[in-house]
Length: 341
Image 1 (cartoon, one colour):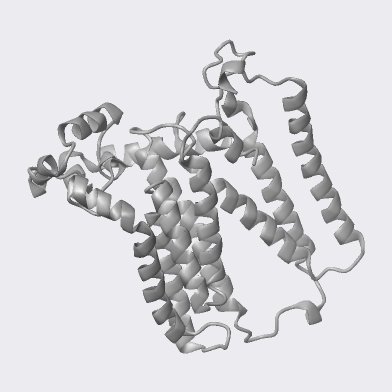
Image 2: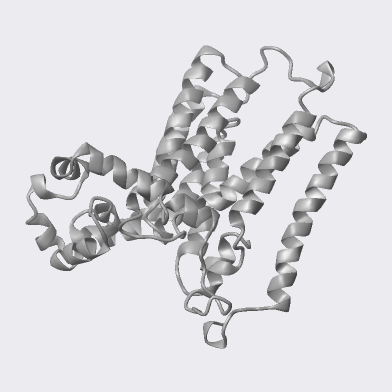
């Protein structure tokens, strides 16, 4: 809440709703790698469609899900199980696609009427512009279907046209600076530079709701690593039986988590020259927090009462104390101006 939703909820914008729908879509997609009832595919389709209506940035998540599920599908063919059926997955993909298109139908109909392309969105072409002024100018010059249809295929903004007009070194530099540069997506995500009363620039004080965002995420990651170490040497009876189908679930889940974080970080880094800020990377906040928390809980779940469990409880209490301290700071010294509330 402090890390992503509140900093973006100060003004009327789609990001808070999109963050929630993105996380729920990701969570259901992650669940489907271990159990794949047909109803789960329908729910996944509804959530992806709603997220797409809120903000047209859900496609990378769906691409990662397809990749992870392809690995799970091949594993399921080789090692069948009752919990996950390759045949049910094939039917489920059809169910997901049908539900997704049904939910997206109003937006697709509008886009087809306005621009002649059901999935068109200007940010999709801004990806291949050098900066925001270039993208804004291109949008102003192509406001409707007729203008878009007049663009020659070899001049339509795309990876191919960008590669044809930029040397590889420039493309690598854009990606490097966009991800890890001074104003790159990672830095603005982990250490937001908000302005406030103390800095003398009160234009965007809401970014200071959780300034040490990276520190809290690092603390959660440290707690997960310690929990994994605490649960590493546990009784053999508590370990999964050899040959259990957990391996396929774990592999697909790791691909889903790592693929989502990696692909979106790279894409948002590439987009950074056009649209700077942390509002894109913040969609990863809830999946990251959930993944680290779930990993920690799964690691210590087999542990009974004892020293290891108490160490983990102390770490949880320390992290919670840090969050409560930040909340108390916000209550004691609010920096929001009246005109922003």
